[in-house]
Length: 418
Image (tube, rainbow, N blue to C red; front, side):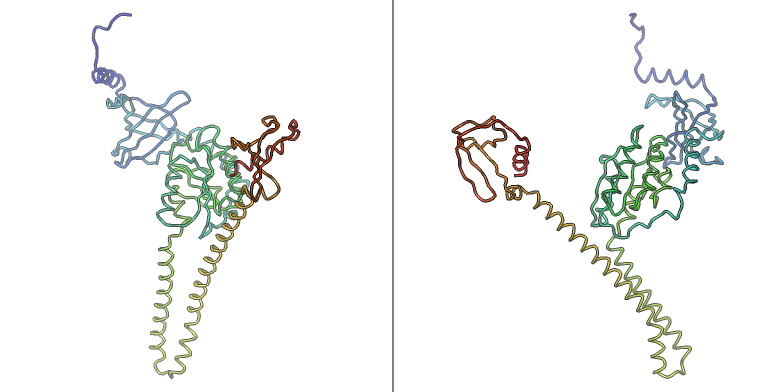
């Protein structure tokens, strides 16, 4: 191998490549499908153009972007015109787009549109299928990645709002070729096992390819078949999936979904106070109007009219108060029932409960090791036997070969519970 005559620094080599590339392609036209399209906070538009074999990064600066007659979206097939540029800080090249034309629907968008029309024809997206989201859920099932940003956002919102609800994370991958069937199965499981009063299907933002599992037919059908109300919280506000159409409610972000299912106690108090003030204000206003209209009416007649007109407002106030009381009482009864069930299950599976059914734990008296197999015992061995109440010591007079493995399993289970 010959030794290069000149050794370049990274900056020098990148600068040379930049000059060659930009001089060779001062203006090009490239057709491809938009992917990972995201406007920036500075007003510029960043996206990728792709075909079946390659990807090209593209930037469209604010001055050109705001003149577009359409909004670029993932999946669109477009013709981009501009100059190639090398971003030296990253050693990457990109197309600086000056003109952008829509030339057709991309393969992914076309596939999703056909799927949407077919499922809509079956009635899976009908408004009549939508169920109301419970106002005071006591438990929320979240189908998402247990390590992703979506579940962290949901937990943070519920903690900040002091919602007092239980969160059941139903783990599932949120992108990749094999994600869709697992997501669908976890949705069915959350519904069948009643893991929550409401189910949130969530993931953070991503490209149209990243969000594809949530538009797969198996996931859409799983959501539509749920008896439990479902909120779709997939991606950011600008992202859409077919899961959004099948769900009972679409949330623009996972954080927004958490806010939808958590009634802040301060907000509830403010709503009650506002209702009270409204009733008082309307009643006083009505009284003033009646006073002007009925100035010549006797005090007795006026009192009767006041009582007559005030009654509906007082009734509305009383009904609202009773509704809140009933809701809170129902929540407390449910919570107490769940605590009682947990206590009974714990007691039923305690080691002492197993021993009380006639089982015993047999140990070597000297080493205190538990005997699980007669092959580890020997004649004359001193044994310590633990019963439901107390212990006793014994000595082996005869050792028989094992006949039933189930007895050994029961002793093993009792030992693991201690």
